[in-house]
Image (cartoon, protein in one colour):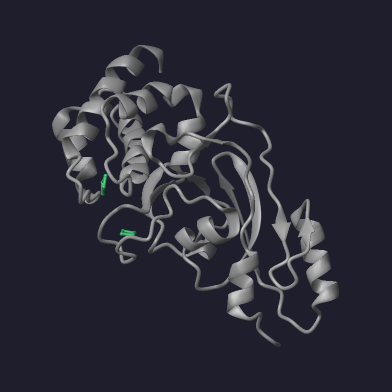
Length: 233
Ligand code: FES
Ligand code: FES
């Protein structure tokens, strides 16, 4: 069967997600609604990777693909839950989760391409509650998994104290590593029952490299958020 030209597949794989940008942190595409409530359903447009025609749901896109592009192999479908929203997307076999987040979903917060080989931690997401490097995880491995990124955590009212502590402590310089550090912060708070020690935070964040040297600020922000959130968890 004929393969889809790679360039066309990539070009049309992007979807649009509505929301206002929380730019205070410099976290790129973190999105949240003004009232701080996570929307039940986000606007997601399914685009045919060959002709660019748009559909409101994946079923119609797949039916269109099979009928209109019979000569082509139907791309692999992956279904996963990202920030509590279910997605079915077309991916190429070799796409990493990082590539799928950017190309198929349009989430760029944690999907940073820094080292792209598992060395810097700037692409860290949570998969089923545990930190994982999205640059070394294949998208097809994530079938049925629950994925959390900085966009979802920032939009969750429960983690508003963490977000505010990050802003207050000026944790972002260039901001490249910040979404992954922020995602790790949520993991650390939960792992240590909202009372991590400074040493535990430093140990957990040791895989997240910051070329701007903001390390101490993350520790302070997480300690402050922990103090504020412990009573209300
Ligand atoms: S970009 Fe994934 S670990 Fe560096
Ligand atoms: S803020 Fe620049 S790499 Fe961390």
